[in-house]
Image (cartoon, rainbow, N blue to C red):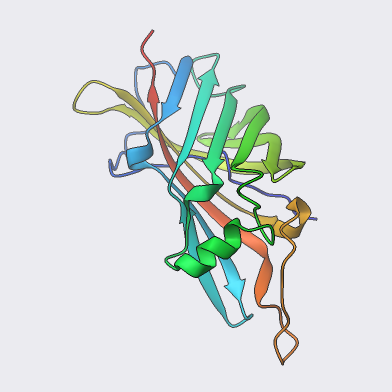
Length: 203
């Protein structure tokens, strides 16, 4: 079963630094997510014929890089399940119920990396453990480093982008109904996209 995930992934926010892929700054040290310039989004099929988009408003994450680039970095990421938003209050309430996330019992989704390897250039492979509800699964995903640069206030920023797919039923999100035509109301595959900007922490 395909287990490509992007839940710990990270990309550019409002600052467009795509062209600035080189910097004299070393990546070594701790990086913290800048939530004002980041997003955690998802997309799922509805009634087979259309799609529903959503996002999580609250999340946090860190990268601990041991060297000049992000090779062998440690990634930790947490999402507040209660911050889910699909622009429909009734649907959001259902998603937080025991049919899906059971947010009262399991308010956080977490990802902790076990390896972070450079493939080539700005492309990395990240493996780690994703926990949703009380289920933990090992996942692997590709992530691209958009660049590292300094903002106008002298802060060093790094942008990452990742996208992938998980099967919600692997993590206990089991609810579904069948249409008259035999199709599922909610698709099993969740397509996720994370755009994250990280700020290097000063020693």
